[in-house]
Amino acid sequence: MILVSTPGTWDAVYWPLDHAPWNGWTLADLVFPFFLFAMGAAVPVALARRRRTPKHLWRHVFRRALVLFGIGLALNALDPSAHLVLSTFRIPGVLQRIALVYVAVAWLTERTSPRTQFIVAVVALLGYWAAMMLIPVPGFGPGVLTEDGNLAAFVDRALLGNHLVHGTWDSEGLLSTIPSIVSALAGVMAGRWLMQSPRPHHDSVWLFLVGLGVAAMGLLWDRVFPINKNLWTSSFVLLSGGLAMSTLALCHWLLDVQGWRGWSTPFAALGRNALATYVLSLGIDNLFTRWDLAQRGTSLKWEVYWFAFGSRLANCCRVETASLAYAIVYTAIWTALATVAYRRHVFIGI
Image (cartoon, rainbow, N blue to C red; front, top):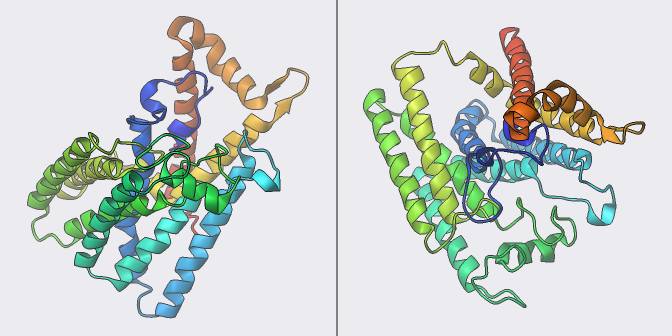
């Protein structure tokens, strides 16, 4: 998430690290659903020690969701493109969606059976598909999946007014949060499968194959309901969820079955302080971008990027390479900081 969110300049990004303009997908489009998938796998385990006191459990869940939502609003305020005008201030966002999904998944895993969770996931994906394709949008009609003409954008405009990132639509809107809950439920199911497995080697292989099959279903569904991260279409949920399952299975096989753990420390460190690292890295990047240097007419970030990378790499290796080099170094710095915190047992949570 840090790598794809903090290039040296947004005017020069290699296509795999940039989001698809509308329909279709890139590697960058998989980052957010993978994050939700990982959260889904972790939620039942994280809540297990609080189940003896349900009152405290739900107080923790709602408090954590409110804090996440609030931090998301703060990041919106720091966004370089944001205009701090109350009438148009953006309400949705990445952390806001995570907060809503977290509450939904916590409730489903604590109050319903695995069978019910699977049924909820299937009904949500089919129902979202049917709603998006059959319910007519005033002025556009049914089944229109353009930026302004789709049902999700219409619902967001009706409920959130002008508080959307693109004015008339938002990539983290309300209606599209429903299928994103399924992305997290996929993590719940996959995590449960591996944790309850009596044959870890055998079941990790099966989960890997099932993940590929689910991703293939998403590609087939793309023919009638396009893969679209902004709309979080049902086909996108299957594609990203299937690939996340296969990735989890591969990591499980490498780390837990084969015991190859030497390479995993930086990833474990980032995982233990995921929220703090993401928020601080993105917040500081936004501050540097908003920090105007009046005497130069540029931002502090641009000066750092151009001095350290752009002026040296743009001519010989393309400006995209310079932009990527900045993002890699910036990500490495935060990974190093997270690793130091991990080794010193400093963990920041909410």
